[in-house]
Length: 212
Image (cartoon, rainbow, N blue to C red; front, side, top):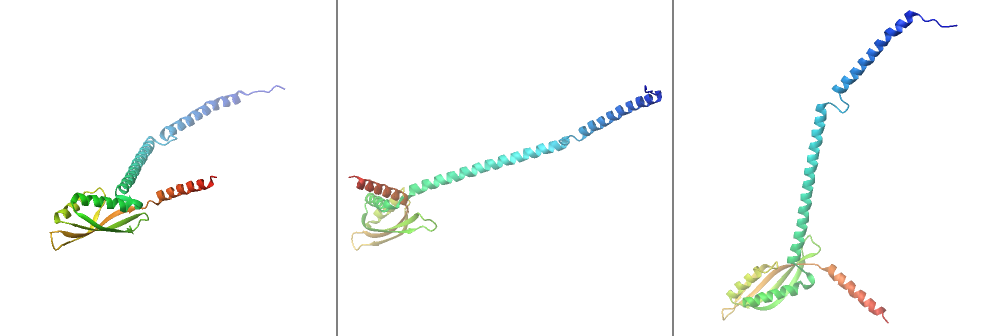
C-alpha cells in the first residue's frame, strides 16, 4: 500500500535544517575564536616568554662551555709548565751528584777558588714520592774576592742551587779563607728509566743464554 506524506511533516523537517546549519556555524565560529584567543602552543606572550627562556638557557650553556674550555686550557698549561720546571731544575737521581759536582768545580775554576772535599746527602721532599732535596757539603780555599765571584757563579747557574749555609775562616797567613758551604739542589727519581734499561739488559742476557 503506498505511503502517504503530509505537508505539515515536510514543513517541520524543512524548518529544522536551517537551524542545524546555523548551530554548526556557531560552533565552528566559537572553535575558531577559541583557537585565536588560546592557540594550541600558548598565547603570543607565552610563546615569547618561552623563546626568551630558551635563549637565556642557551647563553648560559655557552658561557659554561667557554669557562670549562678556559679551565681545561689553564690546567694543560700548568701541567706543561710543571713538566718543564721539573725537567729544567730537577736532575735525575742517578747522575745528579756527578752533574752538580762538575758544575761546582767548573764554577770554582772560573772564580779562581780552590775546591777541596765534597760530600752529599739526600732527603725526600714531604708530600712527594719521587722528588728529593740533595744537600752538598763542600769546602773551598781562596780569597774574599774569589769567594764573592764563586757565589755569583752559583747564583747565575741554570740549576736551582740554594746556598743553605756559608762559613769563612781566615788562615793565619796570606789573606786566604777556608770556606765551608752547604748547597741545596733538587733531584727526581728516574726509576722508570732505570727499570726499562734493566729489563732490556735482562732480556739481552736471556737471549744470549738461549743461543747455542
